[in-house]
Each structure stands twice: as structure tokens, then as C-alpha cells.
Length: 247
Image 1 (cartoon, rainbow, N blue to C red):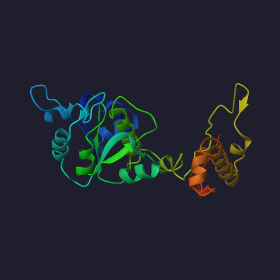
Image 2: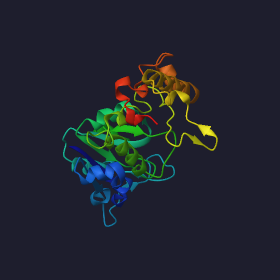
Image 3: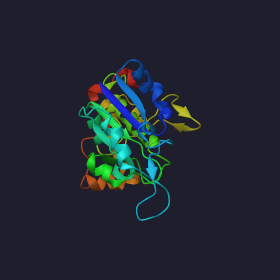
Image 4: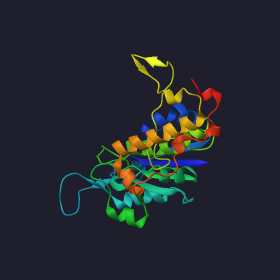
């Protein structure tokens, strides 16, 4: 079972959004488990201090390596990857999410203030992960994003297996546009290709639209694939399109 352990100054923030919808239902069904541990339990002195002034001077406070070390060491070393949410980390990508989702779970350290003493990263082999090129007040919101991305891929969480594979980034590109009833809304109609009943044409349209949108919005993804596109999972196999998918 996928197990998530969060190390945070605000354990009450969890499960938060993860307690609702697909993730929340899966949590109730024990398809995964979550625990949030309070870092201040390992704090120093009467005030349970977890931070101190930065070496060399400067603004803000830095979370202490000794405190974080004790907190991490209190979590069983059971093969789970240990993450540090950080704006300087490697960008989170779907390929990595899928790998983590298939594993035993994650231990996630949620920093605050100016960050953590660099020595804890080196000493405990933490994987620094970023969810985007911006700065948050702390790692908790980023941790929620990582866990949500992982949990939805756990077998049994989503209804249809295609739901987890026919999406943006699964094939290296962005997903095709989606439509549903009514056929016409405010003068806008569903593309004819999706209404024709020809599954090969539908698959081709989805593939072409996914590639078009990727070129327009994320040319960097095209560059990563050497100017081409891999087989489009977005387009789906003809066999996966049934009468109930038609409008």
C-alpha cells in the first residue's frame, strides 16, 4: 500500500484537499495511507525551536539540520523516497509521478522560512522537488500537489484505466480538447470529427489536436522529443472507443 508521511510545522493542514473526491474516497477505502508528523516534537528548548539565523548573515531564518535529522530518523526507513519540497528542486514531471505511485510511498519534508540547512539534504539523501518556478510560503501546498498526482494513479482510485493514461504529459505532449453535451452551446458546436462515429478519424483528430496544442503552448516539450511526437496515448486505441463514448 502507498503510504505518505509528511513532516511539517502544520500537521493540521493534512489531509486537507486529499480528504475529498477520489483521493479522500481512496483514503477511506485504505488504498493508501497518510500521516502528518509535527516537526516541533523534535524542536529544541522550551519553545521547541526548529530554526535559527542563517550562517553568514542575511534575512529570515533557516531550519536546523539537527532538528530535521531527528524528525527524519524517526520515520522508518522502508524504501520510500524522501522528498524536500523546494523551488530550486527538479521540476515535477508525470514520468516521475508514475514511478512514485507504483512504489511503497513517499516521505515528504515541508520546509518553511528561508529553507533548510544544506547539510540535511546531503546527509539524508533528500530529493529536492519543485512544482513550478515560483515561491510558496511553505512546502505543504507543494506536497499536496505531489501526493494528489501520485494517489490518483494508484490502482483502484480511478474508475477506468484510460483515465490515468489519456492525459497531458503521459505521452510527452498535452492532451487534446474535450467536449460533451449539448452538441451546440452559445453558437459553438462540437467538432464534426468527434460526432462521425469513425473511431480511426476520432483517434487521428485527437492526436493532431494534442500535437497542435503542444506546439502552441509548450514548444519546450516538442524540443525535448527532438522535434517529433511519440505515439499519442491521448488519441487512444480504436478498441477503447465504444458506443458509450459517442454523443
